[in-house]
Image 1 (spheres, rainbow, N blue to C red):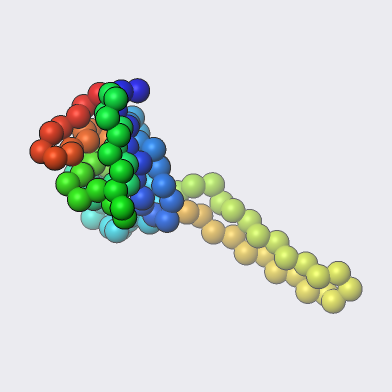
Image 2 (image 1 turned 180 degrees about the horizontal axis):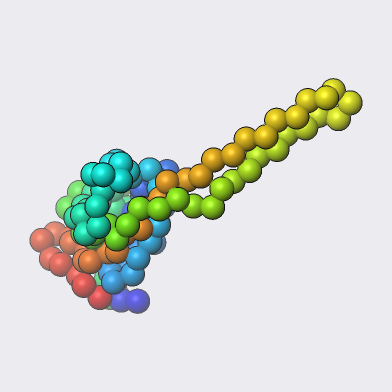
Length: 118
């Protein structure tokens, strides 16, 4: 747990570490024909980096920070069902959707020209 970063992707903030994999939604290219296995990913929206005893914060984001990784595969999350009913009005509505996710692994963290593995 020497090196970790907080990134902003898909409308949520994730705490990522090199060597671990994560599920990310709203990738820019979630088309399965384009997003194959071992596709390289660069994430520039890095909010914070912690390496050993040093912590770097950004005002909006860190300018010289990137997260390098690769996509393992894309998949769907379990179906979410939304059921709305109003009593005594005979109104019922059933909706559902499945989130399209991409599982990616973080290979390394780069900041100011230095690469941090673990």
